[in-house]
Amino acid sequence: MSASQRHDRGAERILVINPGSTTTKVALFEGEVPLFDETVEHGKESLRAFPAVTDQFAFRLRAVKDVLEHHGVLDTPLDAVAGRGGLLAPMQGGTWRVGPAMLATLAEARHGEHPCNLGAALARHFADLHGVEAYIVDPVVTDEMDDVARYTGLPQIRRRSVFHALSHRAAARVAASRCGVAYEEGRFLVAHMGGGVSVAAHRCGRIVDVVNALDGDGPITAERTGRLPVLPVLDLIERGLQTFESMRRIVLREGGLWAHCGTNDLREVERRMETGDAAAAAIFDALAYTIAKELASLAPAVLGAARGGVTTVTAVVLTGGMARSVRLTSRLEAHLGWLGPMVVLPDVEEMRALTQGVLRVLRGEEVAKEYV
Image (cartoon, rainbow, N blue to C red; front, side, top):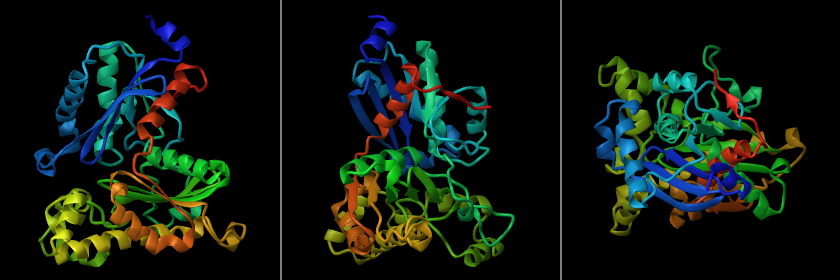
């Protein structure tokens, strides 16, 4: 069957690749129907062998190929490939074509380092093999922040909008549907809880404030320190106990559960709690508390007299791998029930959201943007 025939039937084949902090997700869609959707988990020790994220490319590529070979589709014709968007210059949401300028920016980590930077390159690799286009959708640098949210107490430093935009928007849309409102009319506080945790305020279709964990902000997570007191950090560097680079690594990759428990697996922490491990229980409580504190801190972005007198959010939305923990989501609901109803979406259709963005381009409903 030709590609055009598949398009006529709404059955375009799209490979989707989503590299996260400790996972690589791979899916193959026919139209909006997933033929498979698989998550490969990478042990922390395996990833520590790579000095920089760019060094993980061959490792992640092998993981994707193994999944495709397992499903017998390594040579299956494709119509497009979608990759998770990385750390680029601030940009609009929507679908973007993967081109040389984008790949160069990501390879050099000009705007920061994270495994999502590999999404476009992995997508381009498989797109080139099949002679099709590669795209990213709703990249992590989607920027719709209110100007007031960009300020810090230092004129030289501005807050950036860097977060799990694709997951956030997809989860908020599902939550809106469940609550019986249009996303564009609702007010949501959303937390994506994976290896990193990003928190954002969604007001009437715009994501108006973001807690950016990649700049060292936010809650304790599986492998990030979250927000630290600045002066003690500077003291560690001044005394020679840490360098700037070692501190960056700790903040982004070796903090949180990993630093306290030697694991970034919340399930393992919970297993230890069940055997009476007090240290595991204490860091679990801190993890839940700091996530709740960050979500509550964004309430002024969506509630109050300055926001039309609204007093409760449409929903507090929890998504990402850690949202599978009933213990964690129950703890968060206990902390945050006063804000409004909670919607838990551990398996939000992030891969489907990537696919839908590409389908809109293939079907002429959207024009792909060009990164220059």
